[in-house]
Amino acid sequence: MFGISTCWWEGKEAKGDSIPLEALDMGFEKLELDYRITKEALAQMRPALKGGAQVLSVHHVFPRPQSFLKGPPVADPVSLSSTDKDERAEAVKLAISTIQHAHDLEAKAVVIHLGKVDMEDPTDRLEENSKKGLSWAEEGQRYISELREVRNRKRQKNLDAVLFSLESINKEAEKRDILLGIENRLHFHEIPDLWEIGFILETFSGGNLRYWHDTGHAHVQEKLGILYQRELLERYGSQMLGLHLHDVKELEDHYPPGQGEVDFRALREHLRTAPIKVFEIRSSATRKEVLESLEFIHDLL
Image 1 (cartoon, rainbow, N blue to C red):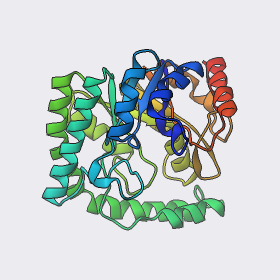
Image 2: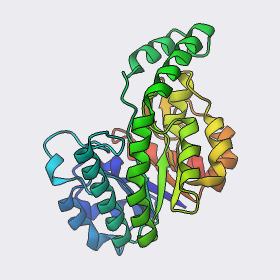
Image 3: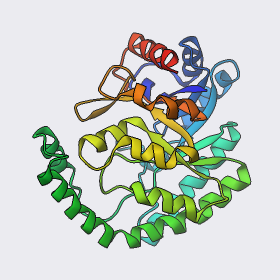
Image 4: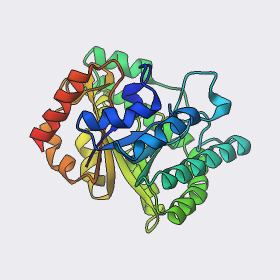
């Protein structure tokens, strides 16, 4: 089943009550409500959900917390991987609230970010190497090996915090019959990496945690020399709850699928088997581009 994330409406003049109807008019029967949606927008949207696109998934943190309205919207204003007890408790509280909202909206899934390892963010150097064509060359791979040593040495306290946080979150998800999609992330220092996905899923085997694949994030990491997109899908495709569909130009993601560099044809079999498919497209894309993208994926699958 196909859905579209409400992130496409960010900055547009559309009110909450028009989004479900416009999504349905565009050919999307389902919606993913993303972390930019405020309580006010949700209240506007609720009546229209009965006659428009239905809620398929919710992106945590949802709705956008009142205490974080002043700055730009972010998916994880507080972190589940934090070693600060108070911050972590607040992050867990917001995740549980997201699950409760998802249940109330009759969604099937919550997409969740797990935080990061407390280390220096190497994105600038990785992007510089990519632009020089060094990502998969010996020099670039040597640098990534050094980064992995640092990350592995520093990650345990943050990984422990994630596992501790997920105990309460998974219990709430089981109680509400909501599946949790652990998303592969964009940046090297973010959790989970390739190995951590499997470790977390195994730790909560039998629970409500699943893998959530993001095509744009995986492609960017491949361009940076960190991993191959196919590695993620081959390892965790059988445990995949859903995916975010978007394309990449250079190192910028969230373009409409079929309008960038991602080889979606090579991913076809994995895309077909994903229970949930959500177009997560930047708001600058035109309606025409979104419709062309939907047609592209329909024809592909």
